[in-house]
Image (tube, rainbow, N blue to C red; front, side, top):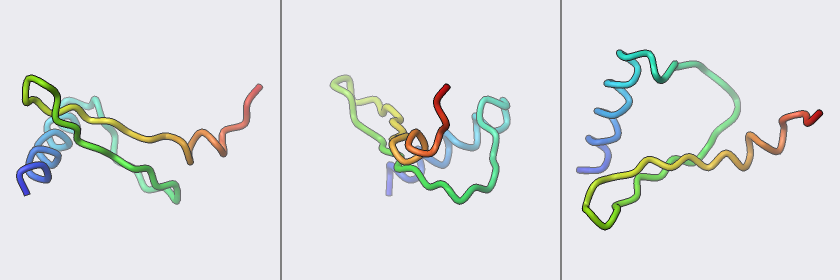
Amino acid sequence: KKELLIFKDYINKNTINKKIYLFKSSIKVFIFLIFKKNKSLQLYIDYYKFNKIIIKN
């Protein structure tokens, strides 16, 4: 529950600051919150599915 609140706070702050833009997509990615050694949280996004559909030049 604590991680979910932290995640929601992170999303809210960064959408207000326009660092994150919300949009709807059929692509779903996994988002992980990982505790670092100093007990802070790091946000990680797994772009594997997204990268599979990108056309490479």
